[in-house]
Image (tube, rainbow, N blue to C red):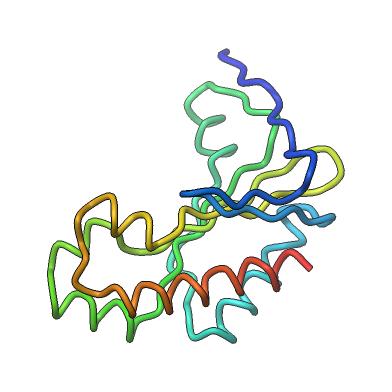
Length: 145
């Protein structure tokens, strides 16, 4: 059976660079589940799907030390507005929030929507994407608390 190594936490607990924004939490991924769902709902996002990578990889014969869950989240109004302008927006939907465990808690992270849109050349909805990013980062901040 293949075994993947333990992920290390960022010592500062937060990472904000050109592409990834992450925040540490003292809570486990299981404990974060409801607070992430509640925060998403407060910001008019829905959780569409949760991918449990540890279980998925285990089912394929690969053990992973860390819990890793990926939440597909979406603000339906923002998504529909962007899709009406350019159907290629579908290539970057929905937004994803990753939650993974480490010693002492978890990390919640996302790729910033402004960077995804910029990397793909989808510049048709700059203001809308900035609004979505602001809400997405607020969801992460609230869920991590």
